[in-house]
Length: 153
Image (cartoon, rainbow, N blue to C red; front, side):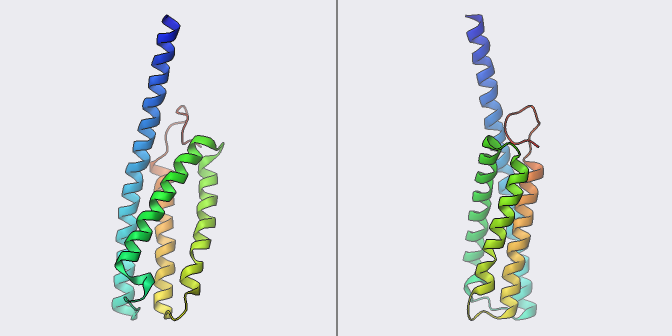
């Protein structure tokens, strides 16, 4: 009976730690999304205002920028959580996966036809800065201690 209570208490503590880790990742993901949106908005404003990038092209439309940033951040947070749960070295693997996805994401801005150079450079800059912000914040602020069986390294 006492052993069962101790087991239940350990189970509750582990569940609480896992919930806390999910909440921490969600909070950091929200912060990362906001930071990436701000930086991407600044890049777009500068590109359109100073370098004549076309704000009407698909990569530079506000809706596309916001949607892509939010979806990419949410997917990154989910991948980060899953790797933290199942991988032996989750942060290292996450950084590798993020780098590969970043390189693949650059195919769109670099190969879209009929887009001027300023728009192309601005879109690439948004991808690079957005990825840097999201990966950087997730792998630093969302870490938990080594004794919690979640994100560690």
